[in-house]
Length: 216
Image (cartoon, rainbow, N blue to C red; front, side):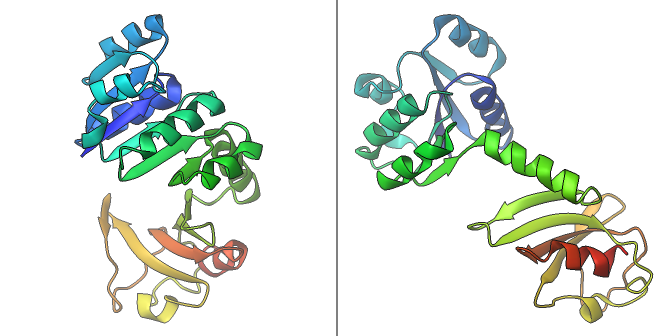
């Protein structure tokens, strides 16, 4: 898979590193020459110093072959303009970072596939940690109507039961468990152990009820 990332700041650099680890071919575009040189020394990727709102530069980056274009700069206007320009190349997936939530609607109006705000996501994660400190991990799923959660089973009422006796319900389904550090898919007749770490798909708004069932 080939992805072009516009923006060599912390978000763009971290994203590029993760995608490279996952086997992606990456080209990173950065307009600041100093930052561009710094990024080039850190990434095993093509780094182009220039403006991502330039058709010539995008074509230099082989935009026609890209599976993803991801605009990650801290400038909403630049991200929006670049994504609008990229649309004419029929890139399969276009993703944009937005810093100001008020701008999100404008991005969606022009047909951007996915609009993400790292600042808002971080705030939501912090809020979840404060309100549900025992939850190991929480990830929003789909359009926000469900969440994937990591949790440790500590409720004696479910310890010793079979998974089919506990899950699925109308509120959650246990989708995986970790045994000896390895992820496994629980079978209906497998027995639940105390302290077992599990991942669940949870219906939005039911986290407290699910926590009572599995942890209290």
